[in-house]
Structures are given as C-alpha cells and as structure tokens.
Image 1: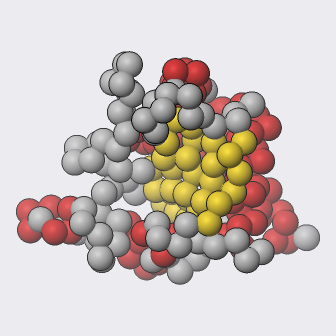
Image 2: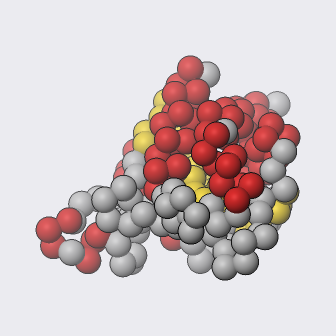
Image 3: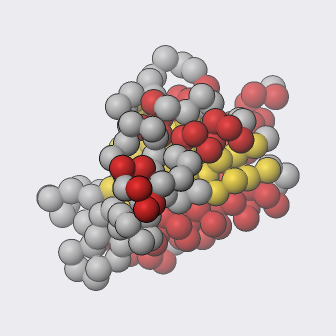
Length: 193
C-alpha cells in the first residue's frame, strides 16, 4: 500500500496552533509524529511519501501565492504519486482550554473508504492513548480532503490548547505514530478481507 503522509502546516512558514503555556508548535508535533508514522508503516511493508507544507492545493493561500516559494502542492504531489491513501496529521486548538480529545475527519460519512480509514485510525488512537473520543466527522471543505483523489483523512491528535492533551502531544508522540500506523494497517486488512 502506498501511503502519503502530510504533517500539518510548515516549520518555516506556518506553525499552525501554538500552546499558550509552553510555545509548543503544531507543525513540530506533526512533523515528528509524521516521521515516526512513516517509519512504522515502512516497517510494516508500506511504501510511504512524506510532505510537510502549507502549500496544500492549487486554490490554497499558502506559499503558492508567493513567487519565491512556489512548488508543487501537497495534494498535487499525492495525486501524481498515485497514493492509495492520504493521512494529514494535525493538533487541534480552541479558545476554551477545557476542549480536549482526538477526532478524525473524512470528506464525507457515506460509508466509503475515507470514512473507513478514519474510523480505523480514530479507534487506534483512542484505544492506545486513552484520548477523549470526539469521533469521526465529515468536512468536505478541508483542502487536503477535497483535492485528493484517494481515500483521505485529517487526524486531529489532540488539543494543543489543553494542558492534559498537550502533555500527551509532547510525551506520547511515538504512541500516536504507532496508533496511526496500526489504523492504516487495520484499514488495509479490512480491504483484503
């Protein structure tokens, strides 16, 4: 199985959410979890490509609008690579510091492969780490779900704005990566059944 991994945001141009307590940046958590996920998936026999960029799709307002930072977008690269699945990794944030838990988004909840992949990953994260389960949700407006041609999900690991979730986002990055990888292999086994 060919898995395209997209750690959310960009180390240099778009940090994503930032912890109000410690300054922990979403882009760094996503990069580390993404690299570990790639490692575990490759060990399981998957072929992986990893790309972290705020240049998401031809219509996005990331780096593609700046002449000095142009290049292929994340979704174009995944489509051109002919990935079997696409996994984007993020951290959530909210003004209310009590918001917590993990949730996984698919383009829609029609019983299709995107929803199935989202459920596999969500179940593994909740089961392995004990995160509050915010469920699998649909969001057809997310660029990485809208412009990919394969089953795609966006995983919100936890709330960087919540002290307890932030502790897990810092101390359990390997556990998150293993859970995402197991979710992908669960999905692959489901397809072969």
